[in-house]
Length: 299
Ligand SMILES: [Zn+2]
Image (cartoon, rainbow, N blue to C red):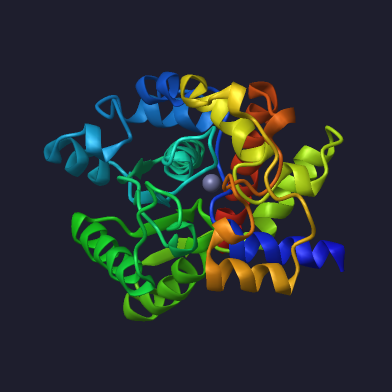
């Protein structure tokens, strides 16, 4: 029961959590694509592809890459929302951006599209700085991404939500798109429970309990942000937020009254055991998990 409650918690509340990414700070990877064997192979085969991030590329270079076999594109779906007094509002987006990059590098012959930086965060609107899309708005954005990316010439499009509140909408929208575009592989890693299980298992290895690793701005997300953006993490503000059980009653409070009704500082969990080293491990685990999920869904 406890485990179920914890899962629900994350699924409904957390919104944020999630995700993230990888080991080294993305900067090195961004400029140096050859990290794994796959990447070395693609680097040898296509010397002209200097970056895999389309926002950093010109249209002729994107066209050339697609013609040379870079026909898969990865898109993260993040959020802009409060993450307690110690993490920036871009937390889920930053994690998603880096995660998508790492996944694209490991998949090989894959480009990265601009991350969707705002998601469905209405339960966090009680805290200044949160910007929330309506479910229908996010659906339309995803469909517009898909239509545009297909016109560019991609034949496999992979969505990676990194904010809990986005998962259900991404999942439903991709099902809709899969029917509309049957000749295109449209994939998403949209099982939030599996995603959180991956993180919980990793933090448990350090003796950190699920209510500390937390659904929102707790140990997990804080560790990851320490690995990615240490200058934006305010350590002297680390403080526990809501660390009690989260059952249906608490979820109802969050939905009906907002996150602030459950946690005054906006944190679900406890960031005090966070570290950059653990963050790197969490990012690695997530990357492995995402790659596995994508491979299982691919034709
Ligand atoms: Zn988050």
